[in-house]
Length: 605
Image (cartoon, rainbow, N blue to C red):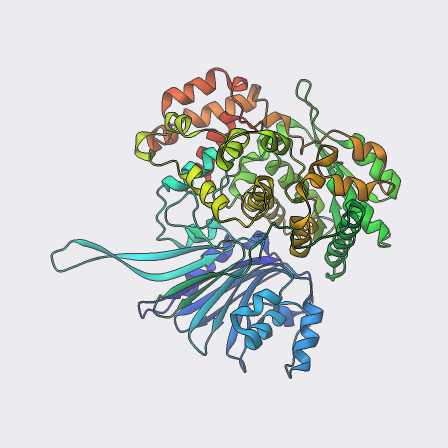
């Protein structure tokens, strides 16, 4: 788990390590254990390392294999690397390190760009192929690891002094801030990205971001850039939500899911040369991870929970449930309590570490939790993805019962704003097509899913989860040099679950397979409790100093000069913030304030 960056030039100029080092500074928190760089003709790369597997210097990066003519920077973990290593040794390859990075390098040498289909894990990497002078990049199937890029241009003039912009370099990094630090980035607002940000719960599907000049590689895709600037992106994985697998009834499905989930959990426990803990929220998903680890024979398991102050009737912790799990399995537990004044005090730090503006209330919670957890362990397992894979959200049954087209049924229970309200929200310069409806409609039309709900869960798993909970967890944990592993997004488990009849997932008010697996393993109170969310009431019910903070942001000179929002809409939300919530219970005022504040913290400075 690390931070990667690099630059490839197309204009005959040599890149400078100074640019790479500026990017590396913005990645330092992702990799506090080592830093390295590499330069070869038009290519320069940098790496910040968090040492998880093979703690020796032999596994430092960038990793260069002179005999193969290949150099790699890699972020992530490959869980099947021991098997691949043995296979590559049988083919005549020799290794100088013991970790997974070199396995990717040799796998690329043996299988070329198809090596990604053999990798089981979470990853974003770049390989410089000196043999054909090209750069090859890849991102894991579920987008657990981030990969941003800029196709840069230099302002020139033609014969009549008319400005011309020529693409002359490609830069990539693990976060957007590193690319901004490198300079020469178009930081104007992307109208498509803005539409998604304000209508799709801050999900901006790849390749777009909120900034025109920054793109991101889509999950399950590769990208090759030649030395002359030619670029080719290809998908290597698609999730198919069809009934190609026919098991005989519910019991066989539950057993198959149990086996696959247990394997996913065990893979993420074994592949590490450091202790592995669990982020225990008290919900079914993280509690089940604890149970499965105990079932696998793990002793002295370390667990961590966080809680905040209540706001009105809204509880700020789920210790009632996490305490039961801790007692049941006798884990080494840390219970962390954060007062609300600390939330606001630390909020600027969390926003500064968001690669993109994220409105999820639990982003700050994960940031503060990770700070404490990183003092004890370097790796944790976390329960993100279970709701999307196994149908746990409250809006799924509502969508299933609704009438109309796929997009109408989805939009009615998910979009934060319909297009008409979006046009009332933003300045006229950002008015345009209903980009979100167009994007979702295209996805549903091209998605391989037998039923509407198959297509919804497919969309959630491959697109929405990537830029909502998964990105939050990556950014907030890696801000403290903590690797978060997400067993529920093991691609083999996801593929199996996609074939399961949706009705079986939605049974028992959602996540029926997980509840059945948990029965007898966890306390019944944890299984049968109402669905909860990471409690962060201070950012949901906007009151007191939190309201003052948001009002100050939206009334600031920076906000007014940016001219992103229509003032009458801002004033309406400020006048009655608790009257305006999205369909999935997010504060619309917080959505506007967070985006503006993210721009002030990360782009304006």
